[in-house]
Image (cartoon, rainbow, N blue to C red; front, side, top):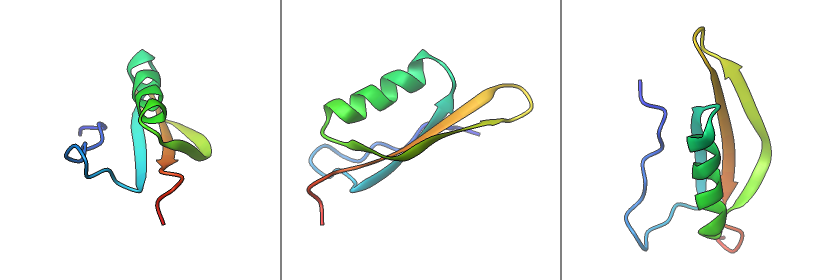
Length: 66
């Protein structure tokens, strides 16, 4: 099972994205890249244990999309 989000084509950004991944540097880089791309955090982050590792989630939204 892949936890990586599907990236929209350039210029066709989604209004809402749910970023997920293992609790490691790559997840933090994924969230940081979304913030640098103009997204803002939406709600609190989530964490769960899948039996082998901790998995994180963070929703992000484009602030000016309506």
